[in-house]
Length: 334
Image (cartoon, rainbow, N blue to C red; front, side):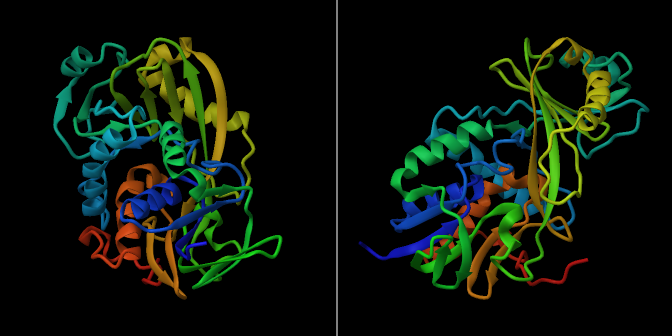
């Protein structure tokens, strides 16, 4: 068998997209996933693509990621990509984000379904969304036999991944993209922590055409009739139990923002575990010879595009996107 250029640990959107970009560069890669593809945070996420140009230390990276998404969606096919924009509502008249301010009348002209209490909003026309479940499925289909599910990695070094049955899979490089599980016995000391998030999915007539953000939650309407409301932020380890308390936390502000949410049919409540870091910024780079792509916290879907470019370029010996500089895993963190 031809020697692997890289073995990638983790079959979420980061690992899959990185493998796809590496394959497009002619590299021979293998993705190892302990469960099914997207079993971690990827298929729980709402798929909001909302770059934050003013975010401390993250603006250029998130903008670079957003610019890549239209091309990725065009290549992958129907993955629910739409540049629908966002409205960030305010109930007291104070802008809750950086961007063009609309008064209450303008807001209701754009989105008649928002709360009559809305005093104004910031319009973010460049915001977009994608369906992460469709993205994961499309990537897995393109990678084919380069993805091995049910493969539990118990040990790593710079040149191989060892499975729980003792199989050692050697490669020129090892990439760790296992999300919140990246530091769980695989890369000792890697500053990644689990952060639970719960979302609620509904079906029915889309209550708005844009993503609505308000009071720490988002309402994401899809053209398919699905609406996603979320998400909690809970530091409770690797617990993925769905709780009534989470629904009670996110639904009232969602209904206040978009009253029609109350009339939608509940489909499911789901929970996942995101990979957090001390400074809430991703970890991209070397860790004891292992190439790490983790720590994306709440921005994993957005940043998967530029992270995959970083991984693919690094594996191919190319210069990675300049916006990915400064996110080395061993940087000082708060």
